[in-house]
Image (cartoon, rainbow, N blue to C red; front, side, top):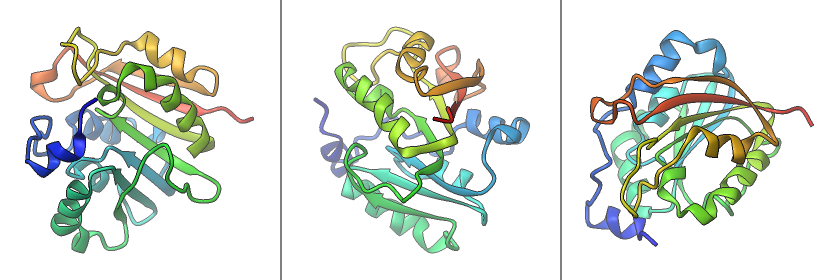
Amino acid sequence: MTDWCNRWDNAETPWDKGQASPALEDLIKNHSHLIPSTGIGLVPGCGSGYDVVLLATDDLHITGLDMSSTCVNLCNEKLGNKSHGQYDFICDDFFKFKVPEGGYDLVYDYTFLCAMPPHMRPDWGKRMAEIIKPGGTLIALQYPLKEKSKQPPFTLSVEIYHELLNENFDNVYLEDAKGHESRSGEEKMSVWKRKQQ
């Protein structure tokens, strides 16, 4: 299993593109009606925090979560004093951390599901259903959708997301992503609404 904390400690972060995802920027610009405008949100496996900052507003507070203290410390050093209360970063385990009462209005996943071993995927789906409130939104930028090597990022598919989410979510948006050029053809942007149960 990949030691993500060690990767951050040694500055081995080739996945870091130095900017927020262009596909998320496109979704916000052209399909903002799909994204909650108020409440609280989470970006698990937040990395350098670009997407956290992009999503956060005065009315939508975003928390970046990562299991690497080095990663979270870097985010706080670089971005913490610019937050104006719109976002924060915490170091914790996605599967065990204390979820705010009532759950999240929004969760954004990009290069998080693909980083975990395939046997953990059902737990990811269950956890998303636990932490997102009924009527809440999951944005999942699906990557990689082309065969990769036998190490992270592990190959995903549209079908896998449906298998993991259909019980508790409705897929309300799915399109080819206008993302990082180096990942062209390997990504789809999807939006899921938590079923009212």
